[in-house]
Length: 134
Image (cartoon, rainbow, N blue to C red):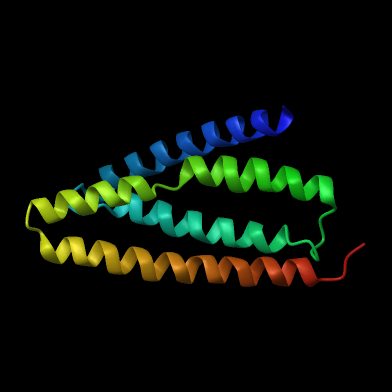
């Protein structure tokens, strides 16, 4: 039952973080192009890659800590924070509005930059995970 609680709390925190960041980016850069969603997906991809590497079975975390990190951070916070469904709807709306360049740019940049971010996060996490500590 605690796992569900951690996922729910993490999901709430991630959703609030997404709402805040998207609003801030939209106010700063406008809403013509979904910059907020893209930034959220890139940073969320980086964060989940970092946490995944830290939570590897051969990493520094013991089994109970690994379970908590996976439930609270990866499933909860990252699940509530990232916005792939928003990305999909915004891309569909751009296509429906015949904004081909914006739709293509959103797809290309989101996919490439999110894959790069998850890879970089994973590399950073794997580096931390492999460091000899106390």
